Amino acid sequence: MQRTSYRPIDCLHFIDGRFMPSLNGKTFANMNPATEETLGTVAEGGAEEVDLAVQAARRALNGPWKKLSANERIAIMRKIGDLILERKAELAALESLDTGKPLWLSESVDIPRAAYNFHFFSDYIRTITTEATQQDDVALNYAIRRPVGVIGLINPWNLPLLLMTWKLAPALAAGNTVVMKPAELTPMTATVLAEICRDAGVPDGVVNLVHGFGPNSAGAALSSHPDVNALSFTGETTTGKVIMAAAAHSLKRLSFELGGKNPNIIFADSNLDEVIETTLKSSFINQGEVCLCGSRIYVERAAYEPFLDKFVAKTKELVVGEPFAEKTKVGALISEEHYERVTGYIRLAVEEGGTILCGGKRPDGLDTGYYLEPTIITGLDRKCRVVNEEIFGPVVTVIPFDSEEEVLEQVNDTHYGLSATVWTNDLRRAHRVAGQIEAGIVWVNTWFLRDLRTPFGGMKQSGIGREGGLHSFEFYTELTNICIKL
Ligand code: NAD
Image (cartoon, rainbow, N blue to C red; front, side, top):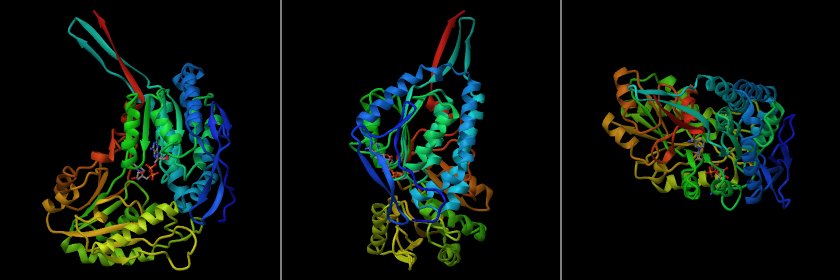
């Protein structure tokens, strides 16, 4: 077991204000990816637990939650954010135990951002207005917003608390009730979050949590439940397709944040030191397990060799190690299955004719845990699977290009469209290129710089809809237009 003063927790469902085991007592083991040891047990929910949770959420919609004034609801939301910060050390430790990510990352990004999601949306809700339209002297129309109803929140394992709160905060701010289904691989911080919501004064039944798997389990039950009005899902594109089909029977409103194969375009006129510093993060932070990571790096030919020399040298300096060690920059991948998948892509890269410039193997001395050295691959082109498919690990390909037109064609030649990064000091080119990339988010000379008011999401098969600011509230509220004849 790793060094932390916080002990892992066993995870129960949280339904109608009470923690409870599964009705049939079923549990599954929660594994620590950095040690391959068992952290504890998790209640394994299915259709029955989901149904209980949905019923509780339905009852709570019209209970004390509805009667709270906006100020009272906002005060509870702010309190949730405050309690997350108060329990930051514990939540960060649990997040790192569950995911294998470095503790400094949980402490500096995941947990503070989770608190900020509540603080941000509790402020933002005050700015939400609706439209009024007068039609000559015939009629006056105005719209009112109301909650959508019971919302299912289904989340992945890579940023567990950050992504759950990114959905939960606006859903609650808008007056909905929810059933959360965290990833089976990372159940701990969602369990603490349920406790925090209770302690902050959220009425029973408003926030429910059911643990379990996806297919034939809690995830599938939630996405097909007839009394769930909307689903907000973040995860793989293939899972999104299954959920969409399951949700079709009851025509649920859907918000999807899905996979990506994000390009970084580096022009020769950019500041190479700045490029390298940020590209190390956009490639390998969180073990490359961030949907926004740039895994296809295109470098203008004049800068290709200098970029590679420095990038490879700096990548080799990244310390791969146990999440709680201070020097660690890259922790462990999430699971054995995922480790096999990512290393399978590295083997495939060699078969496809690629050259591994660094990494590609388990670091020396780390025999237990799913550790992988950050990996840079060259010599592949757009036809290769490694360049086309999402790997979701510390693996990037680097490809040279000669012209703007050529690189844009390659960049857009994918069914993904989540994010992209452009590096150039040419102002006009920055605007010109950024506007032509088929992605929901384009960063210029930076990466992962977020203003939570801005639209976040993907185009093509990287998602449906946008989150952030008003966009989140467009999803979590229904509009009714009231027309008055004058
Ligand atoms: P996943 O799709 O395997 O699982 C995500 C969640 O869906 C889990 O809670 C899982 O239990 C559940 N699930 C799986 N099958 C289901 C089914 N048939 N019905 C209902 N629920 C089901 O994804 P993952 O492996 O946990 O996460 C990695 C993926 O998430 C990557 O593709 C990554 O790009 C994507 N992601 C996207 C964003 C974004 O904002 N676009 C953010 C983070 C991660």
